[in-house]
Image (cartoon, rainbow, N blue to C red; front, side):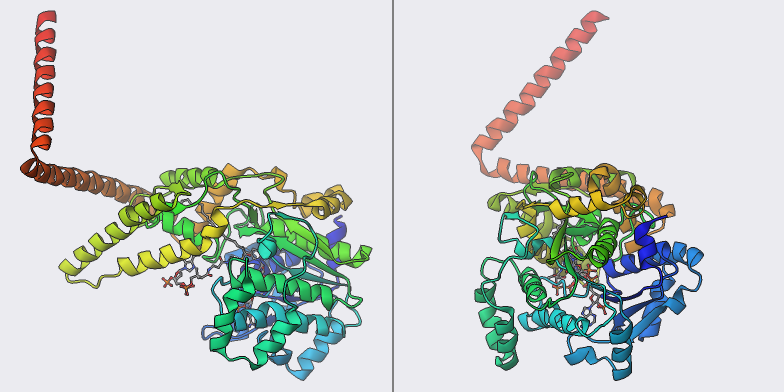
Length: 515
Ligand SMILES: CCCCCCCCCCCCCCCCCCCCCCCC(=O)SCCNC(=O)CCNC(=O)[C@H](O)C(C)(C)COP(=O)(O)OP(=O)(O)OC[C@H]1O[C@@H](n2cnc3c(N)ncnc32)[C@H](O)[C@@H]1OP(=O)(O)O
Ligand SMILES: NC(=O)C1=CN([C@@H]2O[C@H](COP(=O)(O)OP(=O)(O)OC[C@H]3O[C@@H](n4cnc5c(N)ncnc54)[C@H](OP(=O)(O)O)[C@@H]3O)[C@@H](O)[C@H]2O)C=CC1
């Protein structure tokens, strides 16, 4: 019997960010392995015209939860969605709900955050810093609380090269920033933001670092742990391989590559691609929740959920495998044939952007205009290039994350828990994982039917023929223009033609002799 699974039995668990990528996989695993847990409270806001109940219903009826329904048929009775907006004071939670949360919660998993790299400083601080402080304050009033697990990111200290499992101080006190945002107006905040974030690449990573500092400062006598995942990818094994449901991080780029929009990327081929499957992160979270509650470490422990130092993969290997998978299982209605060109050189990258991205988009838009349709490809391409440029920082650097605490925890688990809550990334076979990942993007994110693969392959063949035809026509036009204008080109042309003629004559003569 799994000790960790038994630990969560009968518990009341509070999850923030449960409607997000990590949160859904966390809930799924909890219900599947500890169906006898008491209740999962989730803090949810209405979104995109959906009420709280509709959002929960949609999650529970998704493919991700199919296995859960078998082991925990009354799962819908065990989820209690509480109206909350984490950017509001007291999270806008009603008095009755707050009372219930304060008196019943045993474990907190704080996943909610804004993960947009370009969010405003005000909103990112509200979500990633102030809300964390507010939640810690609530936690300190929970008499039954056993553990508070805060999800940060491995990139919260990406201004350093070697990162230990410790909380690093930030140059400016989080409290000072929170206070000043109260009276500064938005225009001034956006003006000072670049100066505040210094050598952090974006507001997201900076505010996640501030969030960690807040955890350290406001921990009081709570049992707290921080988990820092690197780039969270599709599921590796559970509940099934390749599940993914948003376009963040690698997912959007994989789609853009598969559809043939993105054919070159400013990335260092040998740089470590520190991806970590979402189920691995969730297993670590649950193990940390158990360890923190039962062993009550004296200080706040930080756990890295990264792959680079235990089982490294690089962008080149990843790109090659992504393309190899698209050969076998292409995406439908591609714009061009998938191709990957990684370069870390500025000039080459700009050249590829012009030739491989902007020029085809402009040509296609001309074609749309000529056929009476609305041009759209240049806009799509600019959006993709903007996204790629936001990720460039992470594609051209490698970091070393130490994993002493994570490895220590692994050794503390029973063999059964090591199996059920496996977070040992050394067992991951990258080629298999990437293939399932790409397949998952096609099936679960794009919702493409596998029956459409022959047609998608046929479409790629047509694109290849168009490509050859276009290149040949282009070559002939350029050559014709050159010959018309330059004596040297004419000389080269006559030399090639006479050489080919002589070669053919010789070949014909020698084959006649043999006969
Ligand atoms: C040769 C080339 C191809 C190679 C082929 C092989 C592939 C190789 C392997 C794959 C490469 C993988 C590279 C991964 C690099 C990942 C680095 C990640 C770094 C991690 C840092 C820390 C990790 C974390 O802690 S948190 C999670 C990370 N957070 C994010 O990823 C959020 C990033 N997104 C944003 O900040 C915004 O969306 C932004 C700024 C990129 C765009 O904002 P904007 O307001 O302009 O647009 P949106 O309204 O959001 O969307 C408009 C439009 O764009 C589409 N879109 C959005 N995001 C992406 C995306 N990531 N990729 C592609 N497309 C995206 C979105 O769907 C919208 O489309 P519509 O049609 O208009 O709806
Ligand atoms: N994905 C990744 O690659 C990585 C993620 N992380 C960390 O993991 C955690 C989870 O990330 P992930 O699941 O990918 O992110 P998602 O963007 O998928 O989920 C974010 C969650 O936060 C909730 N949320 C945001 N704003 C509010 C608000 N005002 N009130 C209530 N809820 C809100 C969202 O709710 P709603 O559905 O209503 O928007 C959603 O449930 C974050 O802390 C992130 O920093 C760390 C490293 C990598």
